[in-house]
Length: 240
Image (cartoon, rainbow, N blue to C red; front, side):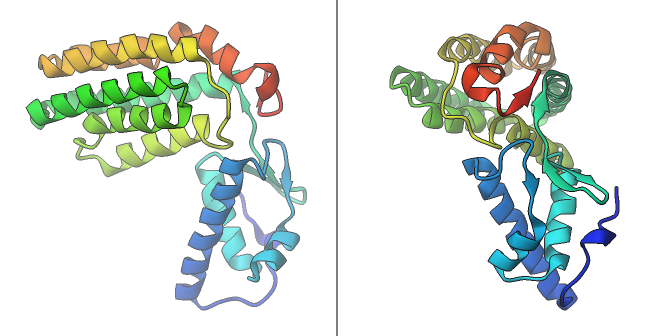
């Protein structure tokens, strides 16, 4: 990871305070990314941000290092910190990684998945259907995440779950787009029903294969991805 020595300066807080302040800065920066206050391609004015938040550069530096590690920003020595835009190559990579992580979680779910989990997934399918009927994408998105979390939460691998969450945020939340491709979500519902049926039937290997080869396949989803990310409304958020 690159050094941020050029960002040092100001009063250094005690270690415990610095850790707490860094977490606060991290949370605030992610809020601004989510709301579109910081846009892909923007350079972050570190001095102005530090002054606005009333803190030294040490917690700001630590928060930015964490955001770089998670893929939200790029740090350029002597140039500053830029909010990373998505391009199709990055999206392809994210799909492949998320598919691998979720596929592994589906296989691991064999040890703990039961009728309660199957019922939960069916209830969330109903919730997603109802949200799409209302064109309520926020409600659909929340139910969609919860649907996948049913089997992801059964994984004993905490890092797998953390990485899956962060990568989905990278794809969908920073910034959160106001528009959505309804045709894509309706096609996803067919995939969700198939995935829920495989898990309920105890075919965890088949579920993992469905996740990797269909639901999180860039090639299968590419036309929807291009429509979603390369629409006129999104051209400022993703590069070709």
